[in-house]
Length: 122
Image: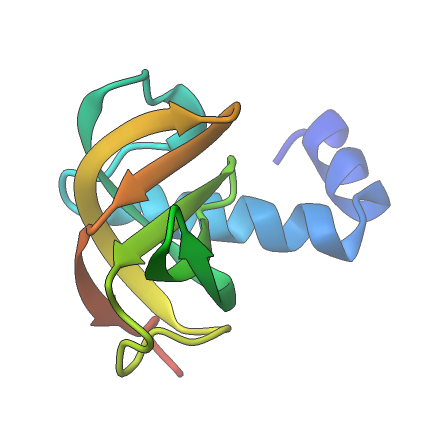
């Protein structure tokens, strides 16, 4: 490490360090890209940690929503007609595939395919 990267690492907040670790882990997954680089209306594969889940009606239909964070950006995941999905809970790691689109300015994937995963040591 050079002096600049060492100094920036020492001065970085815990949140920045965690985001950097998450981004590195996400990009190490085969075929995954950074959420921040994904375009609108594009098929993507993302990997990250579930930050939150909520049950909320969308246009009169029950919807189970989760927020996936990959270290670069957050993406809303929405499963229509679902009240719960086993294993999708805060702190859980997942690999997600689906069509990313912008809904009210937020990157969103409806009814994504998912694979629950763990990092070594968890």
